[in-house]
Image 1: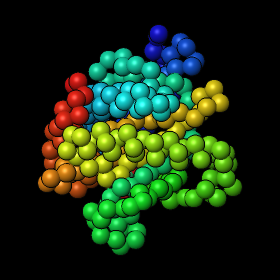
Image 2: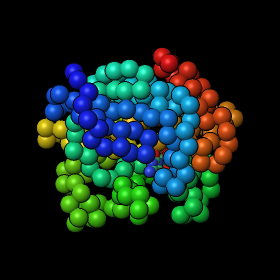
Image 3: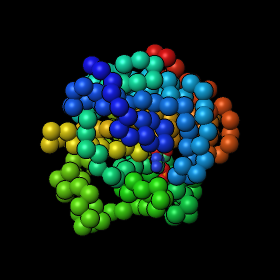
Length: 236
Ligand code: C5P
């Protein structure tokens, strides 16, 4: 498999073509962004930690029967994934209230959400990723109804698998964001799952072990990511 030209550069990852049009290389950079890309910093080792973290999680999800784009790790910073057409909505599940939910609804940070809350957001930095619903998705043609139902079902299946995986390692999966794409007509989980796109708290101390450490200037960002990785058994 030969890595060819860059196709796309996002805020933290870049995508490269390969000599097989079914696959692309996902390259995890050290760039760390917050507030829709308004703040970007380099955090040493982040690309490598997130690449290996994501590979481990995608493999666990795959074993649990969730279709993912992940094929294999290529090196410290790169993975081979299916070349999908991405659906431009983010799927968020919240087990505990935090972040934008608290700001929007004035509920207490840390409140347990039972049943968990599901939200869609439009992937659009210029518009600050506004919350959208199934009607917007249908009307503007971002996905079919069938794809919407599939993304929702898969996002909740991921919750079952990962809530337990993190709980077994003494952590609370507060919330997370997933993105999906279409490959040969089927929906697959895409993008990444890492502490950049979820909230994880230590179950005892409620210490934040995710990107909120960067957003809130708490320091020890990569050290926290590495701690999570070590606790769930990611080989770093
Ligand atoms: O900011 P908010 O509370 O809506 O975020 C919910 C979850 O989705 C958090 O885990 C956050 O890290 C993640 N998220 C993300 N990318 C975005 C927006 C949110 O990974 N663009």
